[in-house]
Image (tube, rainbow, N blue to C red; front, top):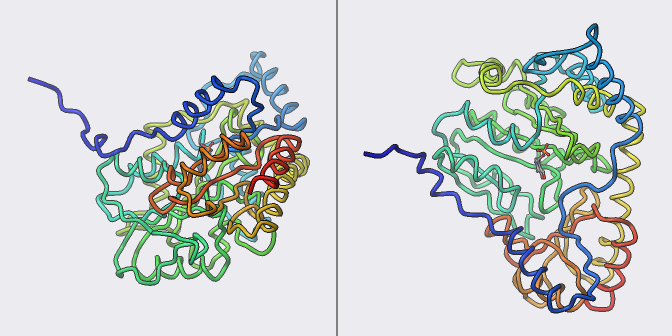
Length: 393
Ligand code: PLP
């Protein structure tokens, strides 16, 4: 006699990426305790929350300490004030949302992982390389996954041409983690048209939209018709430094239906059953981050990171090393020089210049031979890394 487990978990590969990196760095440090290692592998922000956010949090904390202003369970979908703040934020992109289309959550990771719940047994299209949560959450639920293989030829922006016309669940991430590549209007229009034509649904992850410069869509809803075929997931993690504070949202348009079912209602049902809402204090912090003052402050943090990205991008341009990202994204995705594979290049950088990045092969098979550097470090560390790489590469 034995209980049955969800054996789909057996199909999920153990992720050794970050533990392998940590082990190799630890082994190097043991041999070379004097080495000054520069970590450009981190995908986490390093600048603190901004003053507007902190003062909103302090005020909300004080409210929680008074009987008259204390709050208990928060509404599962978010207080109206934050749903309104998100809707107002989207006006910047020319996108009109009603409050019930905005579902506030504790993270884009949670929403990306949980959304599988409301879909059945479809073929799921996932870019390769990409943020690994899309793949793992679908494998855990036993879904059939097919990869949208990307390469330097398509600028790591896979397109629908060549796909069999069928109804798919399609994950798109723009700007992409890890490649930093960003879809332009024409490319995103092709995806939206494909989804409309085939009855597919796009799950659009815009976690890095705040890093976009120039005329690229920040939201999939800037593309006509997307309100009938796309869900959008975004987060304040990278926009406003909320990785440790936790606030994100999912947009489920009223007009998005599958087989006559309004997905908004399905998601509402799912969230009401399995999610307890984001803490009041955090929602007030998020509201402040989305206020004009909060946005101005976050933009300064983003500009700081993008200053780092520009230093790295300039270096690889000077060296003639192929890369994407670094312009609309905090990530630089470069082709490992001299035909090295991702881990060989990792070891080479660690040994020779003590710079740590992330092997591209950790983000999917198509990431082999590529390498991710991030701009979330300090300016001093990035400058030092650029100096060392300049001499070495
Ligand atoms: N989506 C992408 C593409 C990411 O890179 C990340 C975090 O690295 C997330 C979502 C997760 O965001 P959150 O911190 O809101 O869970």
